[in-house]
Image (cartoon, rainbow, N blue to C red; front, top):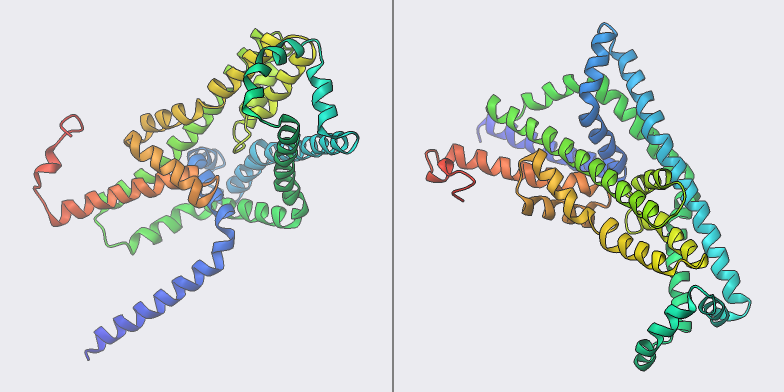
Length: 364
């Protein structure tokens, strides 16, 4: 066997082995590494401006940027998480006490006899009774189960506080080095990729464009949900609509429950105060508009910035969340966008002059 071929095979085997070990080593830290990379890509232009202002001092500029991310994003997010944990504990304790002191029937009966709720119950009950639904045996246990699930998720984060803090530190440390050494690492990475400079630049721009578009889409979606929620609070007469709208914009980032953490208690308060119609309006608005609109407007915002088809954005977001969790909102569209770019490069190199290259989006 030729020595060069033998050397190439040995190096390929060693590189594949090393890559497997590196993947196994870094897989448990995928989430903090992913968020560090996402934050670094989105904010790198700010770092470069700061870098110029600080006369090219890499370490100082990277330290200032990392501290800025910590103060403006990380600390508020951690504070919101612990606030939600505390509220989850209170809700679960109330439901546990209510069911242990007289059962779920007592709680539902006292609620149903409330002057604001009784007319609504009298109207709806004739339609529910023939169905044989055991409200007393399902509503409170279901509420307890929901509260318990949320409480378990939230308290699990607190119980694993050391792991959470450790992952947070990893994210910040990696983010610091992305700022300081990102350009150098980027040059070394692309130097071993066997692609033309134009193709390399195209892939690099695709990642930047899609990541920025997804973050922009998330931000704008949360902003619109907060505005719609604040409008509902103003319309129903609840106090401080601007404040609660801002809280809904922040809670919109939380999977599953999201803005319901704010408008749900608001609707309950309206029921207790006798504003039954307004409470129903707030619930319907919260479910059908505020809670559901993110599934439609987020992909639209991303499509406008990323120049990808709406179908790819939908598949990327939902497939990414299912496969990778919350970070999949960003990772999913990036993976599909890179796949499409690599496919175009493959087609361009192996099948030059293909008629499909001259087709415009309108033709397709």
